[in-house]
Image (cartoon, rainbow, N blue to C red; front, side, top):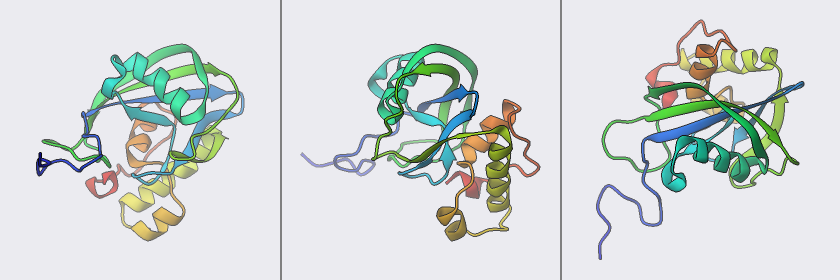
Length: 178
């Protein structure tokens, strides 16, 4: 059997649905540098895939990426974003996102495959990461510079702006969503 031209052997296709989870503590919001594409600092996120409903996907992604268990989960926003995916996709580029606020319990045990340098970021740190993303989006820093020292993953800069956790003065351009 041959592989259709729109797929890559051994790789899941993008289902155009994703969840994101903001876990807060007194020391900030849990973020990390993504160990896989796309480049950037982000909270927990992943495809809905076979997880069923977005709530189930959120719980599964938290466990998969950082080893915590969700004790409370609340939807903060749901919308389409034209962000690229590392998975092969058919049709329009982007995902319908459900972004949740969560409380979690357990010991942080990060996935080496997906997570680098997990940390609790204060709002002032998130703002600095957002400014770096805006500088990248406006061409003031190169893709190479952003890769070495990333800001927020562009889709997350927009979400955190929409949630009024950071202020963007430059909206990330299509270049920065790749």
